[in-house]
Image 1 (cartoon, rainbow, N blue to C red):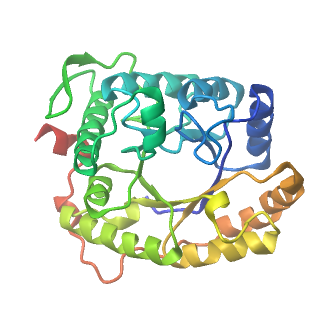
Image 2 (cartoon, rainbow, N blue to C red):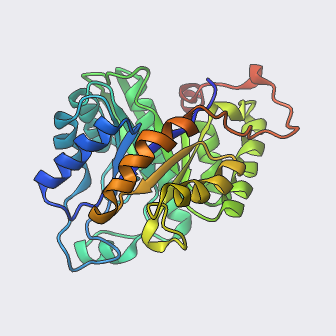
Length: 311
C-alpha cells in the first residue's frame, strides 16, 4: 500500500475530562486523521501537575468519538505486562469500532518509574524486553490461542477472545531511534515513529530502508511518522499557517509522511482551524517522497510478521 500524508494531534493529559472530550471531537470535525495521548504517569515537563493515565482515558475517548483514528504515543513497555496489554488493545479496538492505532515503545522516562516503584532496566534489557513484547503481542492478536517462550516473557495457551475488530490486528506504530530498535520496526511495524531533526529522521529513514531490504520488504509499505514535540522545538508550528508549512517542509524532504503534533494553546486555536481547513487538505494531495533510493527489493522473500514469530 502506498504511503499517504496524514496529520494528527497529540493532546495534554492535564486538561479536564470535559475539555479533553471537547477537543477530540473538534479535531474529528476538522478532519484530522488521528488524535493521540502520551503514555506517561506524570508530565515530564511539569511533574507536579495533574495528569490522567493514557489507556483508561483512551477507552473513554474511544466511546466519545466516531471517525478519527486514536492511539497512545507511545505505550511504554515498562508499565504493563505485554499479554495483559494485548487485552487492553483489543478492548479499545472494539470500543472504537476499529479505529485504534497501537503505538508502542520501550520506555524512557526514568523518574516516573522511580516515583511509581517500577523497575527501569538498563538499555540492553529495555531493547530485549521490547523485542519480545512486540513478538508476543503480535502473535497473540493474530491467533485465537497462542503461546510464547522468551527470556523475559512467557505465556501458555493465551486466548485472544474476542479477536480484534481490525484484521489481522490493529496497526503497529512502533517508536524507535537506535539501530537495534529500528530492526524491530522493519520487521513488525506498520508505521515507524520518532522525533528529531530533519537530518536525524533522514538518516534513520535510510537505515530503515536498508533493514527492510535485508528482509525483502518494500520500504514503501512502512509509514514514517514524526512526533513534533512543540515545547522542545525551536519553531512553533502553530504560530501561523506559514510556520506550520515551514516546520513540516524539511521533514517531508526527509521522507516523513505522517505528522503528529502537540496541540496548540487555546490562543492559537484559530490558527489550527485555518490550517485544518486550508493547508492540511492541500498537503494531503501531495505524493510523499520515496524512501528507497537505489535499493533492490526482492518482495518474494518477505514474510509476514506472524511467520517470523512462528519460525
